[in-house]
Amino acid sequence: MPKITFIGAGSAVFTRNLLGDILTYPELDGSRICLMDIDEGRLKVVDALANKMVVQRKSHATVESTTDRREALRDADYVIITIQVGGLDAYEMDIEIPRKYGVEQCVGDTLNPGGVFRGLRHLAVIEEVARELEEVSPNALILQYTNPMAIICWALAKTSSVRSVGLCHSVQGTSKQLARYVGAPYDEVTYWVAGINHVAWFLRFEWNGQDAYPILRERMEDPAIYGEEPTRFDLMRHFGYFVTESSGHASEYYPYFRRSQQEIEGLVQKFTDPKNAWFDFGRTGGYLRHCLEERDRYYPDIERQLADGVEIPIKRSDEYGAGIMHSIETNTPRHINGNVMNTGLITNLPDGCCVEVPCLVDRTGINPCHVGMLPPAVANVTRRNVDVQELAVLGHVHRDRELIRQAIKLDPLTSAVCTLEQIDAMTNEMFEAQARWLPQFTGGLIAAPAGGPGTGG
Image (cartoon, rainbow, N blue to C red; front, side, top):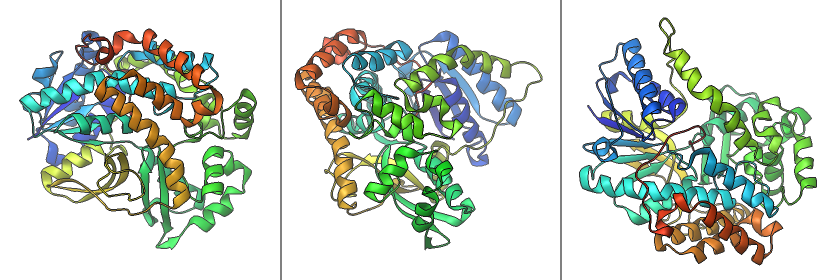
């Protein structure tokens, strides 16, 4: 049975959910689960949680925990990465420093100055993880969940020979939303989605084999439905297709929605769905506030589940990770959307960039599907994000601060609100503030990752 290693296992909710997925597959019973984090307190809690889940499920899986990353990686078949380097202290800098310069990020973990620096912090660790895997488990498969997905996966592919795939739940969640909007049972819809992570497009969305976009466009005129996803419906209205990331988050990736407080308030007023409240309806730092509020409940909730007589809910989630392991171990074909390198898969996005495309999984591994050309306008609005990602990756690979400054100068939101000189000043300030987490630019070392809330793709 496989050895499955969690790097950043202190991200307890994510670890609980992914382990729960693994335990729902009888064919994975008996797997060796290895939990790794640098925070011994968190690791102790997660170890107790995992062992209770195994006992509750009557599973033959074994659980081990360690703060020694190299030993955790030794003989691993699958490595799940869910880290958050710098935790909420670094994340707050990602939001507040750009805000001083007029860059109003709602989430700031994928693009924009926040996403670029989050990527650099994580790559300082993930590059080391990959290097150790090359030495102790060269045939392992990395299941990469940490944001910014595209920047990390692209840099990982450029710097390591270890196999990897980036995994997110945007496609699964959005497909269920669209089925609800058109009134279709979920098992009657099919879709074909491609682009890049968080900017992937439903190129086809069908109900019983018939194009469901006409119904979706009709439903969009209902203010209650439009108010659930105003950014995404506006993008569909102007570019023709529905995109995978939620409206508050998606509003950061384009130069149209967040150029001033007046525009942000206008976006906020369009929301009618209280489920979006955790983003504070798109206001700046909405997800950071959510994480800060959750911090005090995060581990107490887990500890309550550890009490005697309390049963931990174990059910299969929409995450792809456990299904991928099941398909590879049993040769069961499965369709996912994965983040992989563009080897001619999307012909009007740059070769070698990180794309999110349909993939088939079986014993041979992750097999990406050829998509061809995206619609021209969709390709061009997507490419603006790819250009930022490319320079961020090159900046990390070559340890070149000027490339990082140039990456942020190309960012759609930042370039809509800042002068070139302001972007230089902002980027320099972020380098100085986050120097402790950026050893590739300072010559220092980071020993290992830490888990925490808000790490997933």
